[in-house]
Image 1 (cartoon, helix red, strand yellow):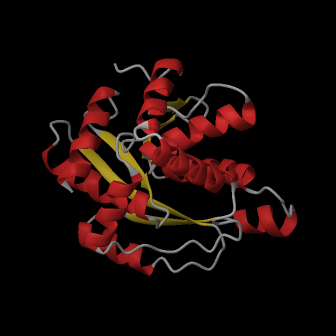
Image 2: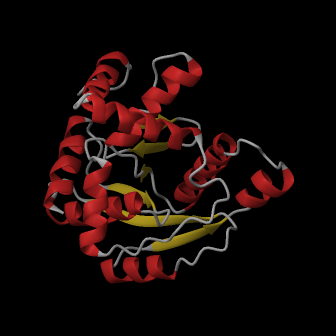
Length: 235
C-alpha cells in the first residue's frame, strides 16, 4: 500500500487532482485496478492535507456479475456505494451486435458513470488507468490512428461538469497485481464476451516482447508521450 500511495500522491500533486472539499467517486468495476484505486484513495483520505469526500460507483451492464464482494468491501471501509443499472450489454451485443464492441461500450460506460456521479452530487471521478494503460493507449493511437495521443491525467468534461482523475498513472500494472495477490482483493471477474480478445490485448503482447528485447522501452515510451501530448505537462 505504501508503494501505491507514494505514486498516487505524486500524481495527485503533480496534476493538482484534489482540492479542499472535493466530492469524489471511484469508478469501481470490480477489477484489480479500480479496487486498488479505491483502497489507496481511502488510505490517502486519512492524512491528505486537503479533505475530500469519497464514494464508489459500479455500473451494472447487465452481464450477470455478482457485486456482493464490492458491497462488503465498501461497507468495511465505510465508503458509500452505489450500483447503477444500465442496458449497455443489451445495446452493444444484443441490439447492435457490434463486431468491435470496445469503442461503443467505452463511450456508453463513460456517459453512464458521469451521469451517475452527477446525480449523486459528485464532481470528480477517479479511474483505474495505470502506467501500462498510458503506454498501451499511446501505442494504440500511433499504430491504429496514426497520431500522437493519449488520455490525460486530469480531464474536465464541460458538458457534464465532471472532472476525470487518473491517480495511478505512475503505478505499473505488475505492482497492482502484487498488491491484489498479497491483500486478496475481492476481484469480480468480468463476463464481457469480448474480454481478452481486443486490440489492447494485442498491444500488451507486443509491448511485453519489446520490453523483453529492450529493457526500459515502456518507460522511454512514457517519457516520449509526456513530452509530446498536450495536457501532460506537470503543473
